[in-house]
Image 1 (cartoon, rainbow, N blue to C red):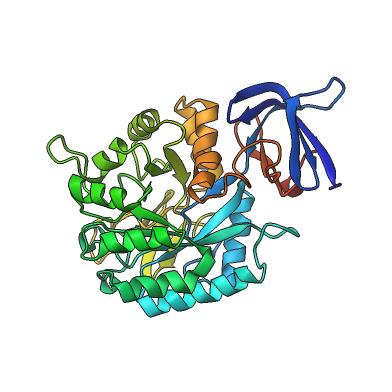
Image 2 (spheres, rainbow, N blue to C red; image 1 turned 90 degrees about the horizontal axis):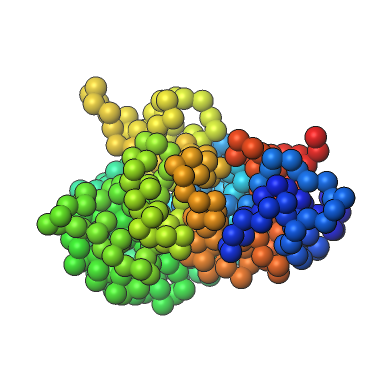
Length: 393
């Protein structure tokens, strides 16, 4: 791959619309221009250029688990997802004892400080740490280990915030737990994103968390009470708050397609972030796996906790990839610009990375996914380098 590259395709999806027969010029790892393709430039027939996907909630993939902060495992999982178009990713931890989580975060943060996964030199870009737990509701624990769920205290909150340091990107919190609202404010003050999730909060409790600075709803609709006309709960609060971004797992198991469509139309391009919530089993055969010390069985594309009886256990993350989530949204008739925003632009903004990535715009890092006519990944460009697939043929 040379220092300069021109990618031309039938469609180029920008934040402002879809450019027909467009071209993205890349120089020095950055997007130089986005414009109509010059005559004579070879166009990737039938293909579409979209910005690299940004996954703000993922636990693993390709047989690797991110949940302990092991640098090799984080690198392996990120590399697997990069092959499916994800050029920026968070390492999402699951519930564990506070000290164990802090040790895992400190180890990963030290590696990131040393440039372990900064998206250069062919390395996948790991943008930081997401704590999904331990400050969650036992009644909505899902696949989180209930033995380690606790109320937040100033000390435990500070322990996790300090351990992650500048790599703290997000923490999911159940607003109804004692001390939760103070923790929301502390996470925001530290530069992180406070998210509402794994919660039985009422509408008013969720609204208090939003007022304190929460700006994300963790996998909306999952691990929370249903939206009822007399008890709208956290779903109602999330839909009612323009400032809140709703994570959606578009794998056909976690959410009905109609729910995906309603939420996307209600919140708009700036209010929805596609996530995978993927576990180590993503990209691997059906079978038994582990998540946070719990046994998980993957069958027919769904990951569920193993139970002692014949009843299916709770969904335990997913085996989803971002390209599949994008295809599902487009297949529902969601406009390309909105689907691209949900997969890239909005999650990048959530992380405070809008000036670096998440859109096909001059000056941003050259993170580009080439999709074929069936919306399958043909090639992935990260920081101006071809890291997966091919531009030939």
